[in-house]
Amino acid sequence: MTRFITSSFSHLILLIGILIMVVPVWMIFASSTHTSSMINMNGLQMFLGDSFYENYLRVLLYQGGFFKEITALKMFFNSFIMATGVAILSVVTSLMAAYALVYYRIKHATLLFWIIFITILVPLELRIFPTYSVMAELNLVNSYFGLIVPISASAIATLFFRQFYKTVPDELLESAKLDGANTWRFFIDFLIPLSKTMIVAMLIFMFVFGYNQYLWPLLVTTSEQYWTVVMGLKMMSGSIVHRFAFVMMSMVPPILIIILLQKHFIKGVFQDK
Amino acid sequence: MSFLDLKNVTKIYPNGTKAVHETSLSIDEGEFMVFVGPSGCGKSTLLRMVAGLEDITEGDINLDGKLMNEVDPSERDVAMVFQNYALYPHMNVYNNLAYGLKNRGIDKETIEQKVNDAAKLLQISDYLQRKPSMLSGGQRQRVAMGRAIVRNPKIFLFDEPLSNLDAKLRIQMRLEIKKLQQKVGVTSIFVTHDQVEAMTLADRLAVINNGIIEQLGTPIEIYDNPKSLFVAGFIGSPQMNFLDGNLKNKTLSAEGFEIKDINSDFEGEVTLGIRPEHLSQSENALISLKVELVEQLGSDNLVYGQLKNKKDFCYRCPGNQTIEKGSNLSLNIENNKYYIFDKSTGKRVN
Image (cartoon, rainbow over all chains, first blue to last red; front, side, top):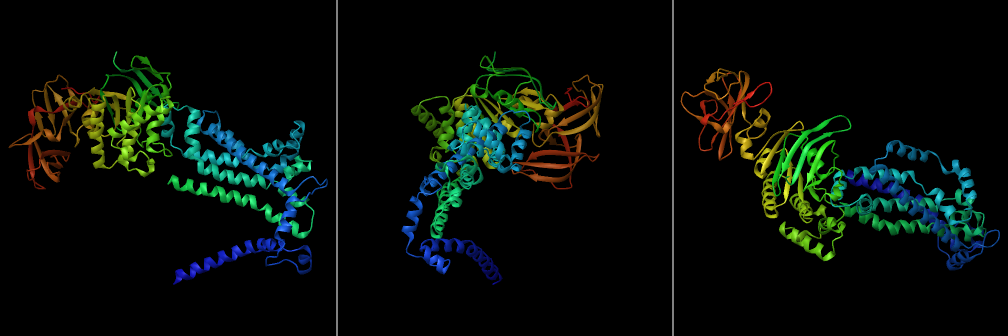
């Protein structure tokens, strides 16, 4: 009986938490399917209206910005390129950095690692002007390269991979060596398949990180052609329902990535057992 | 020159620990050599130097006429079975076996042929598609051996491969390893701290202590004729009984008894060693034992007790004899099978 009460109580708390998180999102979604005048007169709506296609289509194809050069569709494309680029590049670089730190006989490898780790304490905002001037010198302002590369070195991902590699037993490397594998083969044939689960987790994490960037894209792009979704949230003008529709759509890619990759993530976890 | 030749091989770790002292050893082709010794004696280090997983500080290792000192482990053509098997967890059994062959650029059909042959030999054909995590301890052990066999290496190295198995399986796998080695005929080195494993597997045995080979020989030679106190104590189960004594004018005076006409000119403090199985009961014999505990193994009884001077002593007799706790036994040494060691150096003197 006490068990029933405690479990009901914890369920109740969870339900309240879910409601607090979901209701505002639902209200924005419901409101985004009404007409502007309806919202302006009656406030936010709890139930669906009938202007869904009209509003969402308009937002996707509307030529916005100061020079009317950019559509929401193009922004989604830009954000996708940027987030994917950041995710892949940061995972690849941290995999290799961690491999070098753990498996190569580097002098002061631990010290080097801590120096890399300390960069977590230096936020992007602190180095944003020097980084910008480097990009400007290299003529990389207004390019995908400029959007992606400066934020693609991840100390956290390096930390995770390094800690994982340290748990891989030495005998595995020795056994692989006797089987004729060189250091490169060991990396490709062993460490990458073994850290598959962690790679997927890091891909999700870094995709969302890249997708959510605001300040850096704002600084490094002057052409509307390179606007991202998160920038667009601020820049897009339009009526209240169109903004709501844009907000709703901007949430879709990160959620989609999590849903799509989570399958592999869970599969990886179960296979390892 | 023999097949594997170690000449004055020494290993000093960067922190100054000397793990292996100027060890020289020759192993013939097809021979089954066992390194046995307590943990930390340097036996695994020696094995890993043969494999190339440890650098050699001094000395030379020759395999099949070629100097191996600077050869990378992947080029040495040696195969090793590790204590925890070190199977590749993300590959199925087939790929575990095939991986080494793939790296050597062998074509697919030959690989399949070789893997299937090895799997058949080790009776693991049914598990080829399984991952190592789905196998039992004994099956993993077989896969680890399969991975070694399939490459047809110049030499097999076993690093305590049986210590993770339960007692029954260990005995079974011990037999299988021996049979397999005889069938395949590959030169093998087997490292263990278990003297029973060492005795049963070895063609020749190297008893290692503190980085030095104390004695090298066939198991029976070493059992019958231990050259030092350490070897005498390490080989044989239950352990040899040791008694303090004094040797003078070819007469040994030990705790309460004397042995005359000893074949040694040594004089001074000695340790007398008697194996529990080299004793027999008789009237008015040398040693008087007060029985405290009897372990009945069925085939044998192990009788533990104390001598007159409270020294612990063990006697092994056939299992059909009944021995009462608390009784007094009178024991003689059979056929003069006793060993006398210099107490200060541990060297055999008779």
